[in-house]
Length: 239
Ligand SMILES: Cc1ncc(COP(=O)(O)O)c(C=O)c1O
Image (cartoon, rainbow, N blue to C red):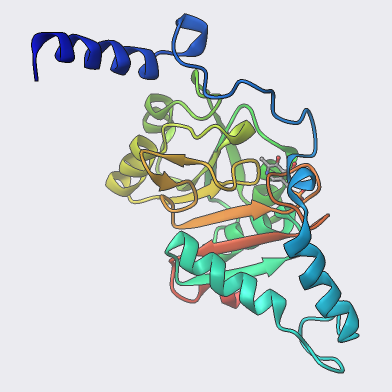
C-alpha cells in the first residue's frame, strides 16, 4: 500500500470507529421507530404462518385437530441460532427469568448479582426463588461494570444476571470471563437485545442461560411470550 493509501485507510478506520457524535460515520441516517420495534417488522411471513395455524384450527402447542408444531420449530431454531442445547418457550420474559434462576437451582441463602439498571422482573425472578439480589454498578454501556462484578462476587454468589439494556450489549466478554474464573453461573437477559451482537457473537451465547422476551415492545414480537435457552444439561427442559 502506498503512503497515501495507508493514510486514507487510517482515515476510513478513524471515521468508522468514531462515534457519529464525534464526527464518525453515522450507523443510521433515518431514526428507528420510536416504539414497538418488533411490531414494525411483522409482515407476510408472519401472516402466512399464523394463517396456517388458524386454518388448522390448532392454536395449542401440545395437541389439537392438526398441530402445526410452530413452538417446537421456534425452540429448535433458537437452539441452532444461539448454539445452546436446550430452548424452552414460555409465556413471557418474566417467566423465562424465573425458569432460568430455578433451572440453576438457586434458592434460599444464595445471592445473584444484578445491575442497578434493569427491569423489575430481574429482581422478582431472584426473590421468587428465595434468593437475594445484590446490586452491581453499571458503566457507560448501561450494563454491569465488570470491575464491580468482580468486587461484589462473594462466598454466597451463585450467579450473575447480566441485562443488555436497550439493545446495547454490555461488556459481556469480560463479565463471562470473571464468572468462569470465579465459578459462578452467568444468565444473560437479552429481553431488549434479541439480534444484538458483540464482536460478531450474539448476546445470549456468552452465558450459561440466555433469556428473551417476545412482548410487544421488543425487537421480535409475538405480542407476548418468552424463551429460556441454555447449555446447562437438562436444567432448562426440567423446569
Ligand atoms: C430487560 C427485561 N427483562 C425482562 C423483561 C420481561 O419481559 P416480559 O415483558 O415478556 O415479561 C423485560 C420487559 O420489558 C425487560 O425489558
